[in-house]
Image 1: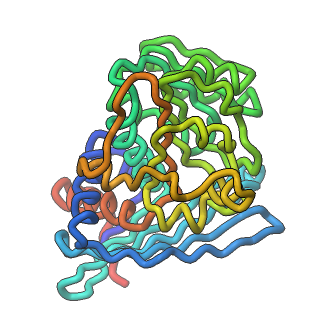
Image 2: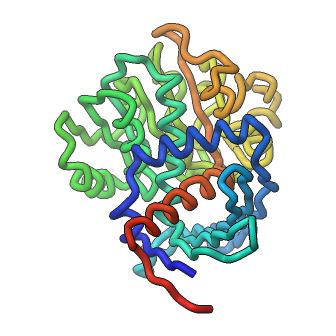
Length: 325
């Protein structure tokens, strides 16, 4: 079995590659060539933490995987990472367990890649500004994906704890455009062509009233029914709302579940799924005035797509550690 660490994966796998691999996986999904049982979520309310178990199989590449990821928000105070995960990759020809792969970076990069694909189809072609709402673990890859598909020259950062926004600005100091730290989320959103929202908030973090015509939003932070980082006004103002999967957001996206239960919004308003958007089976952005929203709660075959690609590249380049179990 091959063991791959986060640093080893980062050394060989880029956002550009992840977007390409995800687009291919979406095509396989649309062809019905993927098995993707619903994930199991175990909650630990006293710690506001979760453990997720996510299996999948992809016939065209001959691989199956299960990801186990834990999300413990209190970990930074203990000197540990909030999100930790591993992926077990296996061969569907003979059942051999091929690799144990660190999933932390891959979770972030595949989520970013999904947002990148959505942004490519839903954001204005001439989008030039992006607001990052929530400067935590997911934000960097979200921004990387947007930068892959649009020529952004201004980035606005907002985080409830302002010091984290400053830390994030330091991370992206290689960006050649303008970086502003904004202490009001609505102000940041009102100036942005693209909004990246990646928080664990249980209450909306910006007002939909702040959105300007032509804005595209990627919402990836709230992934449980009680979480709601995007308000109902945002949904009502959006002419196209696309989900990574409709089944997933119906079960897990508080951004949708809460207003639907209150009778203020309906799942029938969803425009469709990311796979349909990438395949051209539903319309992309049609003008520079409409507001669009992509919501992702994550799905196991996204992890399989990037894990299988990383494994193949690691074998070719001799990266990783081989162990006998």
